[in-house]
Image (cartoon, rainbow, N blue to C red; front, side, top):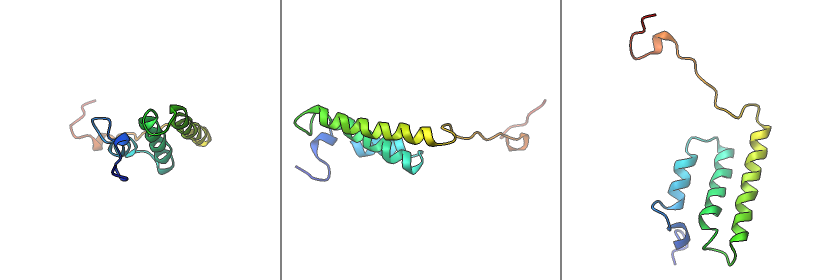
Amino acid sequence: MNPISPPYYQRYKQETIDMIMDIAKDLPGDEAVLVGNAIKYLCRYRTKNPTPLEDAKKAQWYVNKLVELLESKPCATPPTHRIMKDELPYPLDI
């Protein structure tokens, strides 16, 4: 067994690390860590440990931490940028 890329992370079309990196790439660092770990435990919960409950509880712990983090942030939605008329790639006739 390859300790860097074990079979329980290779069960899907995309390896778990690649999936995590794709999902978390635009998240703030603190959120990316929590989301990535939750995904990791959910991807392997039926294959790595003797019982699925252990990894399911670990995933739940990370999701709970993510909820706490999001509740503590002043704004859980990304800021919007108001586009000015001169920023448009096409003319705007109003």
